[in-house]
Image (cartoon, helix red, strand yellow):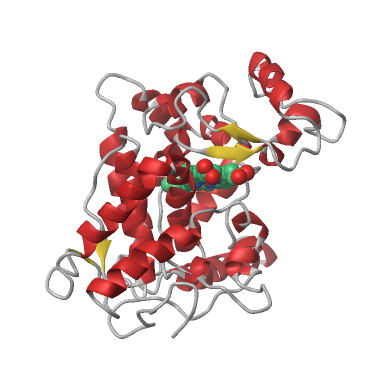
Length: 329
Ligand code: HEM
């Protein structure tokens, strides 16, 4: 009896948590070409600014793709990650977001949009469109981005690290990762497909240091990681190094391709969360599929990005369209 009460409690909690993220989990109110009439040049303006930026600062592709993930997973895709707060108490000051870069690029895109069509295009949509354009700029897939998101007015430093509902940690195991995605209406397939975003960009050594030096607190290494790879990473990353960066997908970290999956299957995924994808039959099968002839990774990535872009969106008369992405109106 006590057991069934517990189960009921867990079930109720899950329903409450899903409610937190799913004001429009199905993306109701979003559509491709939302600005067709109100600002026909909107998407071309975003693409032009991003292509200019990529020609001088291609290393911003990773952070700008990651930004959409960090926005959508906390309070839904509502631009809350962009807000400043006078006393540093908004999401962007939370530990997982301290390694985000490119906020000034979002501001630059928004400025160009405000010049052409004042008060029309939301910051949340800018983040979604930029994520697509940096993927294309790194030779990845193109997909149609649904737009029509509105911007939220709340951004709290504690949300990204809130147990159970914050951003998944780099050390999360497969169960926790799947739960984190399921809470937001995303499947195990979305998890393995979107983790493929790690085909571009860099990670701080501190995000995987324990795998090299102190996995279980006994000065040991992560037994699931290729020992040759560990030896190589140790040359780059010394203990307690807070500044050095390592490529998530060495050899092709500037190119959006399938080599991330090749690495993970060879036990060379950089983060524990990457390696964890080997520990579930469905995600493991996908890793193999993604590197086979006839891989559907590029097409799947577009589909899963659209799914992620629907999380908890504000639409219609909800929220607002910010004039400046760092401030509520
Ligand atoms: C599955 C759960 C995920 C976890 C635990 C995770 C964790 C991380 C961590 C720890 C880093 C390195 C940060 C640093 O040390 O500087 C990183 C980088 C990155 N992540 Fe993820 N991530 C996840 C999912 C995603 C998703 C869904 C995307 C986008 C589709 C994404 C895109 C990226 C990119 C592009 C970078 C490189 C950023 C840069 O170059 O600065 N990640 N991620």
